[in-house]
Image 1 (cartoon, rainbow, N blue to C red):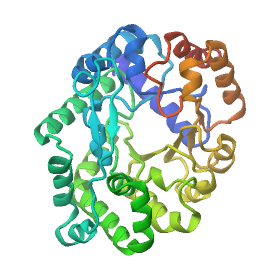
Image 2: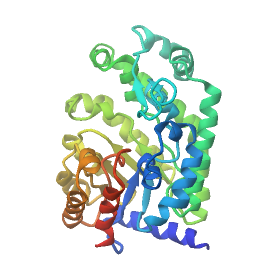
Image 3: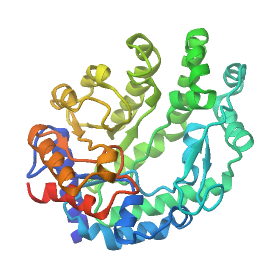
Image 4: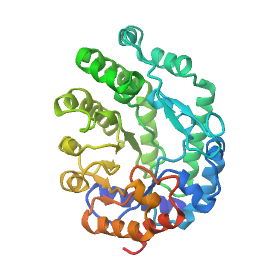
Length: 380
């Protein structure tokens, strides 16, 4: 076993221990997002370069950044280029150096390309055919370019894995609720929930039916091959960010949101995988639902809008959970502020806790602030 293989297994066990509610030796650390990491060593790097040269950026992070952070245990939201991020949510992606200035952050532009009457078309012809019409005809994405980008992302994740980072073999399941909501427009979509609720449910189930049929054997094989090497595979489940408790009441959440979360998680768990709930937005009122998943198999990743203390008290006995330091603090706060907040969370959150930024490290986060977040683990 190489030193990187041993490091990967050590990091994996630290995260798995947190999932079981046991602190192995210290609090685990999760970093997310690669834009801030590349600027840690190359602060002059433009967003345009990051988009056009994502594989070179990954190599730089692996070779020059990761050695600075040997106590970083989990690296999320890395490896994939942002060129087609909007496609996952039925939006256009405006890019630096193309629609935007060279050093301006990429943007998602929502054109609301799902029209009245499209629900009947989907139910008649199937989801995949309609999805392709939306992506390639209505939004103008290029299928060949998307395929090449996906292949590059796979190579990037392999580089991270070989460098000793665990959990780089899984991927993200689809987001049926959010695709429909963003594609239709939130106001129109919420009207559809009341007027065409049965159709929305049928379409969401159709999306998952097609995904499971197409990917079940691939996911099972990935998990089985990883198990032979002693590795676990984590899949990201985030099917309905727009079903959070700031937007939906409990009755609508139980009808349209929770069934998606439960079905996707049960699908992954049933195949032997582990689940990473990436829960942007506020889920404070809905946390009790997540207690039903088996202990030691899941991680709840919040972004600061969900009450961290309630996550600790409600889900800490069942699964690991991440802390969250506000993006504004990470980007514009002082290193001392970040260090003190991180140390406070480490002291108060218990044995299931994983120190992490809110969603991702902001792309404009100064290197000194990244160092301060890391120092909170170094000084434990």
